[in-house]
Image (cartoon, rainbow over all chains, first blue to last red; front, side):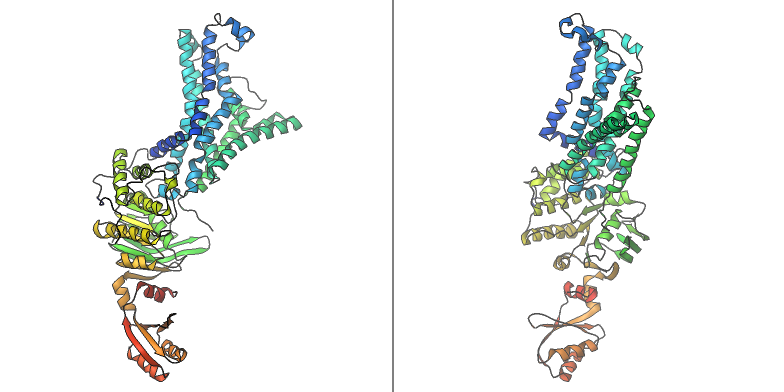
Length: 290
Length: 303
C-alpha cells in the first residue's frame, strides 16, 4: 500500500473557541493578499499624492511671504478653511484615486471566492453570512479610511503644527468630525459598491472594469442628460456628483449642484440598499441551480 | 449515535432532493452511496447547516442541525467535491487561515497547518502558490484544511474524484488511517463503489432522495439475497425467464458469466430445477461473496 505520510497524524490539544470578531482573519488576509499584487502597491502609493500636495499647500499657506514668487495670484486658494478640506475630499481626481485603489486591491474580494468555489469552505466554519460580509467590507473600509480619515486628520494636525497655535481648531472645532463623517460615508458607500460589483462576476478583471465603468458611465450619462435637458436633478445619476454633494453638505460648503443634499444621500442609500439585497442572494454556501 | 436524522426532507424548487430520510449512523467510516441526484450532497449540506430542511430534524454529535450549526461546524471537517482554494495563497497560509476561522488561535493554527500538510504529503510543497498545484495536490489540500482543526467527524464529498490511480490509493490510505487509527469518524459520499467497499464498515444507500438501504456492510450482504455465479450451455433466455419467475434477479456479464441474485427465502436447488426444466446444462455453479457493487445494483437497480 502506498503511503504519503511524512509525519503521523496527531490530535490537537487546544480548545476551539468562539471569537469575538470572527471576521477579523478574513479582513487581515484580504489586506495581505492585496499588498501581494505588485500593480496594486504602485497604485496605492500613488493614491497618497493628493495628500502630499495638500500638505505642501498647508505649509506654504503658513509661509506665504517665503513663497511669494511661486504663489503669485493664487494665495486665495491657500486660505485654509473647511473649504480647503472639502476641496481635498471631494475633488474628482481624489475620488477617482479611491476607485482606482479599490478596483485593483479589492475587486476580487468576492469574485475570487466565487471563481475558486471557496465560499463553501468559509461556511463550513462557524461563520455566518454576516461575518463573511463584515470581513470583506472591513478590507474595503481599511483602504478607504487610510486614504480619507487618516490623511484628513493628519492634515489638521499639521495645520496646527505649522501654525504653532490652536486657533484653527478653536475656530472650526467640528472639522475633525466632518472629516470622520465624510470618511465614514465614503467607506459605507464604496464598501457596498465594490462588494456588489465583486459579487456579480467570477472574473476579477471583469470586476475591475465594472468598478471603473459604473463610476465613469454614471458621470458621463449624467453629463449628457444635463446637457440635453438642463435639469439640475439629473446630477443625481452621477456617483461622483452625489458624493460631492454629500461632501459639500458635511463640510458646510455651498452645494455644487442645485439639488437638495438629502436627495444625494437618498441615492447613495438606495445604492447601498440594493447592494445589500444582491449580496444577500449572492453570498451563500451552496450554489443552487434550479 | 454521532449522526441522527428523522424524516428529513428538502426540495430545490419543485425537485425533491430528500424525502423523509431517517437514519442513525454510528462510529467508524460510513459510506454514502447513490446514483446522481440521489440526495447525497444535499444530505451532507443539510448536516453542515448549508441548507435548511423543509421538514424533519437531525443531530450531529448531539447538536441540532437547525439551531446549533456553529457547534456542528466547529466539530466537523468538510472536504467538498469541487476544487476550492484561494488564489495568491500558499498551502500553509491557506490551511492556517481556515484553522483560524474554525476558532484556533493564530499561532496554533499555523503550527497545526504545518503538521497536517506533512501528514497529507504536501510538506515539501507547503510554501508553493496554490495556483500552481496539480489536481491531486489540491485534493490533498482540501483534506488538510478539513483536518486542521482536529474535527471529530469528517464529511468527504467524492474524495478521490479527479485523481490518478496512484493518487487515489494514497488518499484512500490517508482516509483509512484517519478513520481506523485516529478515532475520527468519516462520512464518505462517493460514486466509486470500490472506495466505499475498501474503507467503510457501514453504508447508507440513497435513491431518489429516499433511504434505499442502511446498515453494516456485512449485514446488508447477508440479509438481502444470495448471489450465485453460473456458466451454462443452452438457451439462456428461457432459463432466465424461469428464474425471474421465481423472484430472482439475473444479470448476464459480457464474458458469459450469469449472476443470480436469489431472495433470502429462496432455495438454491430452484436453480438446478429451472435448469432441468429448460434443458440447460450447468457448467459451473459457485455461491459468490456479494460485493458492494452487487448490493448497490440490487438496491438501486442499476449496474
